[in-house]
Image 1: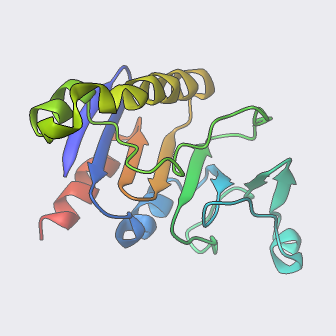
Image 2: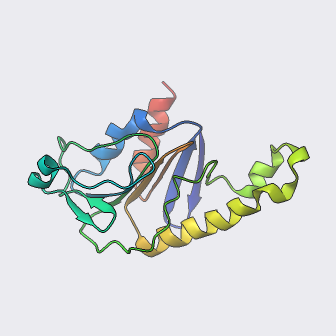
Length: 172
């Protein structure tokens, strides 16, 4: 597990999807709205039963009603979630980061220290640009929490106790 801080956000990253701590993330975001920007690498729309429970679509984004402790949330691999304390008009032209293989928040300089030198240092140039775009998008949208369940599990949050609970549960 690797952790870091960026502005008002703390983040953690693991080398596997974060399916194991979905419950912890959902509990910590009770009362917030969930915006699902990717589901199994694609888009998701509410099924009839979900619509009856208050789920809606905003373009290609599925939006939850205010989350409660027992709200059922669809999830799979290669999902991307944003949590907000109130409803927002989620901008249409947002990048979905979970679908980029090997996407990571670990600074490129740190990764180069452990990188196979036969690949050449410029083989991570794409990642620096993508990280810059990621943080620009996070700072613009200002979610309470962001989750990516792809090649790596990534949780970014203003809620430091959430990340500490996840870290502690992984160390058991």
